[in-house]
Length: 403
Image (cartoon, rainbow, N blue to C red; front, side, top):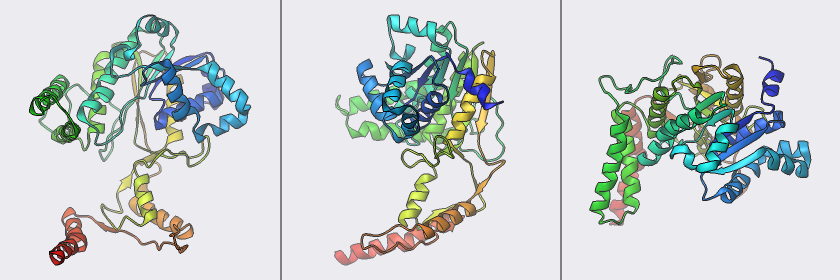
């Protein structure tokens, strides 16, 4: 499909975006405003007490970021501000509630205007509290679908999910209700929701109505435990899978597209190369390598890491909207790189070594930090033995001497 056809398609369209303060959400907003300033409206739903607070949050967490510098340069500061005021409408709400937490006439007005809903809100924290992850990633998918059904002129609901952390060839098929990664197990989402409420009630009784850090810790542990029980490595991929199950159960004849990106990293070229927010996925390893705080790791240099630049995910999202516009049923896209452009562990390690050898980290005394390759262990037993010998044993000796 020609780029001009995709760009022209969004003229006079009204789009509701949840998760616009997130990494991909910001990029999507910037891309639409940059390539199609004639879009009719972008409704940005964010958690806030009221619309004024929502506007302030969008300004500070989205529009004032360096990501929008290209737009500011293109239109000038005054022109950029006019564009934002004309096209962007802040909404104070929450995807964890029915109608996104909106009420009355605002819901009716939105349901008349909206052409597309991009449901990108959700927590991406691998070790999120179970109750928070369920509300955001599971109920958020269900309530997004319910809201979409009320929109009389809706042409597409696009849901941003993840492909999980499985290996091998993954087909673009829908998840069936109750399906798990652990053979012989059945997942009951309603039971999981009830389990969380029961656990929280028991904590309240145990703490005599006063909850502190113990609730946060208990909810995180429960999430990890339930995810592991059903075969998922973390609460993020687990709850995203449950969200897809509920979406599949409720879509009926809605036009739905599900986008499943792999590990999303910095931009490749759009609006400029290398934009990222925080240390994400493999970026944590790059930062650790730069600081030389990465002496050892467990893995195999032959393993493939599936990473995809964020701007490519946004491009797929826009093209998918056009291709499946007002098309009844559900389409699923995996946005990944490992089949055509695989990143093996040894390539990643060599790239880090080459780059930081040319651009070394400078210490406070002005001397460059020496780069060393980390030790890699294929077996966890070897990895654990190394940690004991190099770290635990010296600490125990120091502890004994201090006594």
